[in-house]
Length: 481
Ligand SMILES: *Cc1c(COP(=O)(O)O)cnc(C)c1O
Image (cartoon, rainbow, N blue to C red; front, side):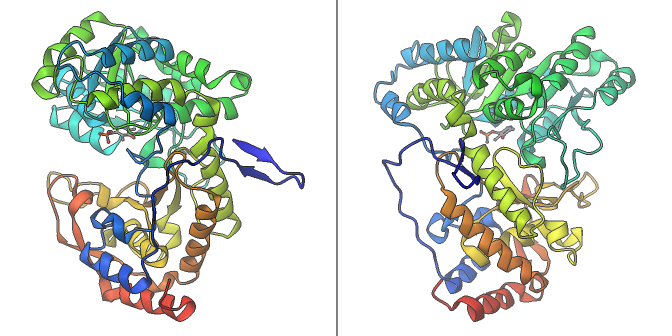
């Protein structure tokens, strides 16, 4: 929640008490250099013990509530018919309004099933923006992902409150060009993860629904970060300023024929689900579920996580929970902009992002500016961010690099984990890095996996720039921090 101080300053205030803590340490610069070199300049390959503030992702790293933890103790481990599943069903019905729910072990498992069942080879799947695992699964099923965002969605500096909107005109053209029978479904990602956690508006979603229903095209919403999207609708869409986050989520869900989610984000657990009111979809999903995930009442999740997800679903629509990360990110982004750091605006859900092309204009896309940026942030601060640029794109079928639309270093803000002083520190070190940006050079692969290479690929720092940067850091701060 944002709260106004008596001097007029607005700060994000924690609407929770911290009652369990995890110790963290700041490895000194020499250690950080060793760690990033060992990890092939890939922040995915760092170990937790080498990290001070972990902003790699908000996936599975959020703080759970006392009620979530308590619920795990009463979970029912029955292989079939477990009571935990029925609590999840009730929560899905109450919060989202769906009668049927299929649990899966995480978000990509839902995407795997949707691809397998609903995508025919040669189909197209239009969407506001892709997510890495979404694209991988839908294309493995023989489909083609079409991104039909509005022209300004990729502008990293913007005042458009809804950069996650789908372009309705382009959607109509896609229907005309491919024919509705070749469109598996239209997918709306609630806060577009890869372009900065930018939301879509309710008005846009309703238009999508209207056009889709005219052609019998199912609307699928990726609800992984639905609570943040709903919160932004409340904050940014006039008509909804007095609506509760809960009511907004319900209204969003009413536009969908099917939804799925990674429970690792908004619901603060580790798992996933697919939900629908369509009995036909449910029966088909249920038939495939035991092949890939597990029996319908657990679907590859532990019963403890199912219990906690039922609680997390109810809690995520609470204003304080839905705003917790979004408001801290707003503060983070505002501070970066104040210091002249090229942050992505407006602030989105999930993370603060830095535009690496603007931050490191001397590094060409073929030398992975976002990857270099993430490694440099780690060196300068012990903060782990994630490359979201060309390394996150796999090569095309001819083996060529595919330059990403945007090159971002993403600094995720897991829900209810970090505080304002952590954010102040991050901004300070980013500022230092910005002043020393010319020391940072590009990267080159020496180990490159063929699929989702960003996870385990290893790279070399051109001209050994990591050492130069570490030396500059030591000169300014000493070798102890
Ligand atoms: C995280 C995420 C996924 C994939 O979920 P996993 O639980 O990581 O498999 C899919 N879509 C979006 C929008 C996500 O944020």
